[in-house]
Image (cartoon, rainbow, N blue to C red):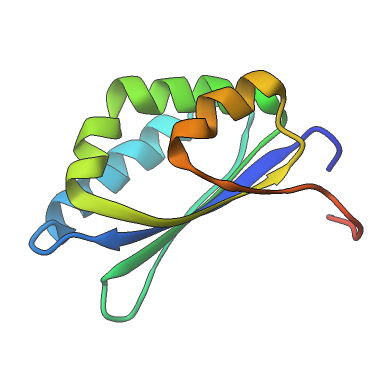
Length: 118
């Protein structure tokens, strides 16, 4: 838990973009699955298919930076055409470089406080 960085991003699917977004999701899941330091990459959708949550967890800030740079290069443009971010919550202690990279996304940061993970 000490070095891991994770987040949940909540997205509102833009009208008429669900099918395109589903195709992009498949591409993003496949691409991210090859990142050895990506621990979780889970997508959830509401019953009305209008809201999506993505839960991501990386072993450390460097792994997170690698992923985000790949996202920006390969998928960000198409992603933003399909959705509107409504909430972004980052968990852990991201490095200053990681925080700088995430700054444009306007996240709320929560530092570890207690508990455990198995």
